[in-house]
Image (cartoon, rainbow, N blue to C red; front, side, top):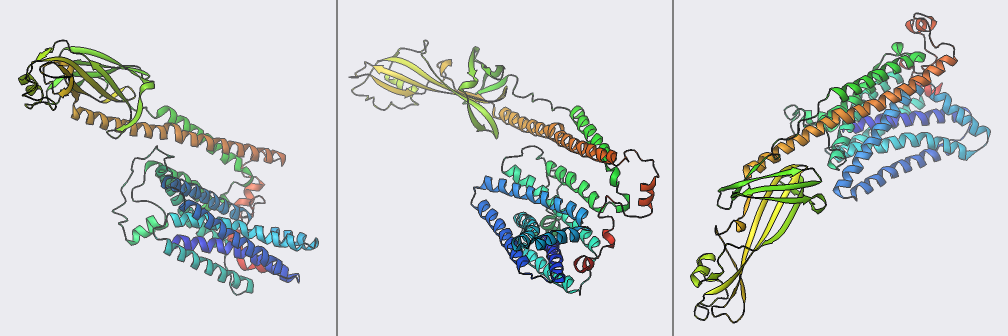
Length: 555
């Protein structure tokens, strides 16, 4: 509620300030306010419609797409509030002059539509910012009802203050107001960065940096006042992830420094020096991360021989993968019989096994045993069938002996992650084609071959081994994701920041050269003016702290 209240108050007061400046100008020049109100009302309606449309679209999407939509809205809100803070810091002093100049042109041209359009565009910018920022705050709020109430109260208070300023009964220090609310909104926006990164992960867009950092449950237990402040207002979850903390810090620190940095210490026309320095620092930091962050050691389990166990728990042999990632071979040694099964990458399918995204092969083959008896008695059949006469054999009319043709159907399943053997199993089904012994036609029965032939044995990898392999793979994949964050993603962000700062510095340097002040001597006239507190001609917000809101509207 507090976050949406401050958003409504801040954005509403900015809109009220703009409307008040235009209204005072028109009133002073004896013109009707009707055109202005047409533009203001149209902007308000369109702003509300934008927020409603975005919410309807978001609710109608599937869960993953909803999370992605919330991430986009949160990112747009962060960009908007940051641009608003920067814009107000630079243009607060000249806002009245710019708006009055536009209004004067509209009056000179006699265009009612131009005047309405000017008010429409001026308020629409604030309305769009408010709609998107409010929507993002609602989506990250614990209670949308209280968040909406806070926004309504903030807007109502802003309207009352704006009317009081217009009537001349309220005086407000513009610099202090925008500084205090700006600091608060920076923290709120930093929380939205964390929320956007969390929903982006839930949408499947961000998979790196998901290790938890600290547990804040002790600081902000559910339902407490601390939780309402830390989680509900500032958007900090009880279990912040690595990438969320990085995003929060990378946004909060520079923007907060921009808002709080004393005006007298701002570089002004020499800002390019700071920009060059920051660009160099960001580039060096990116290079250090790329070079210094070590790559995680690959898993060792699953690369060597693994024990095979039979259905009775006996160890029957070993199995391991050999070859490259695209052409693997499963080599098994079962009861001194060694085999090698080729696993073509094109023949694999994707599967989730033991919590891992693995490739799986399902291999079917048929074996015709040569060591099993070809003649069986009725008693032999009973033994092979677990002590019971197979279905379809009548002991009176089919006394045997029978001629037997054996066939063993073998199915092997193999799961691999890269070149790591995650799991493997082998199952067999033994069938007999019986003839003679009183049978009028050949009959096929399924039997349990037991230990009579190695070809019919079923086996699987040791369960403790496969669980250990899966755990090691999970730990390694987490380390790889963290390495990607600090070795690739973060350096990329720093490199982009360095490039932007470098281009901005070059632009400022060229502008300074054009003014003939590219390399001023330390302690020169410009520095002396700033040291004495004189306003910098290129820092229009240098006297914000002395600017009174009532004067802006009525002067």
